[in-house]
Image (cartoon, rainbow over all chains, first blue to last red; front, top):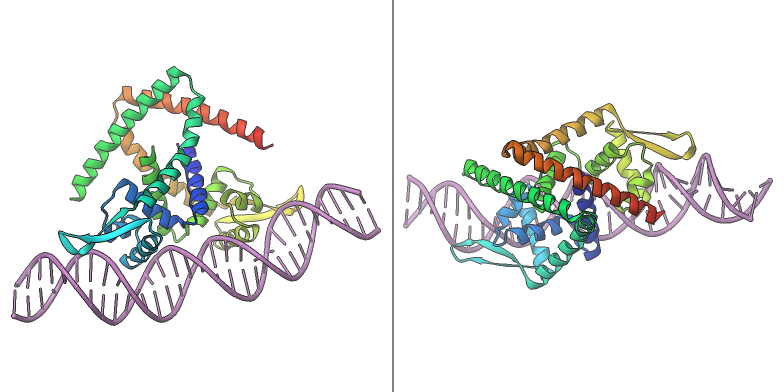
Length: 140
Length: 140
DNA sequence: ATATAAAGTTAAGTCTGCTTAACTAAAAAG
DNA sequence: CTTTTTAGTTAAGCAGACTTAACTTTATAT
């Protein structure tokens, strides 16, 4: 498990470097991939940096046309951040590249083994989902 | 799976920040935790940076007494890098903190579910090990 | 209506990581 | 025994991320 993460980190760094993005920049793109419609404040909170820092990072990504920043209609102070089409395709590439390894791993398994792994993943996903909603409730 | 990594990354960044370490520095400590007796060249290769950069990072960690750098008896040009006791306890703390989340997740499972997950992990570990040795052979 | 708080931006300055280039010392090759 | 490679260090300089502080604009509270 930790091994997978070790590997994944490396892939991530590699991909970021290949695309000319810094790790923080890449991180923001991933964040927007998973949770779109973010505000700048969500970014700063997620990465534990100041609003100013987040704003500057976001601005760079906007300038490279990877994300778009528009006014939130319900609160005109806030901004809604989203991936542009360019950003989406980039991230999609990155994800595929990172998952090539997983596919290779899957090929090493027999059908029976793969079924077992699938089941375990489903179980874990359920548990994780349950945990997340609980912590959400606790924070709110 | 990706979700776990997302979470893990956050924990990692948080812990690194709390200890006053930068991510690259923390990464080196982790590397030494998993594969001790590294040379400076191993570090630079792992993180895809120059020897100079690795040497400088290593030096900072040596100065903060987290790792030790001694001459390799079998090749006096090379250095053997290892965690000091101080470094070891630090990393141990970090690992425990990161795994608290996994433990919480495990608590959400029934005994039967946990058994299934355990089995799946064993399968995956085997496959990963097989893959690693194969890629080693390919590189060599 | 005024005061206060909140979201974001901008600018100035600091700190790190990283690279290239020049160097030392040890090992391997000829 | 010289020559060349290899491992690592050091210094100079650049680029990026980050922080604080000052500011603008919108929302909220009194």
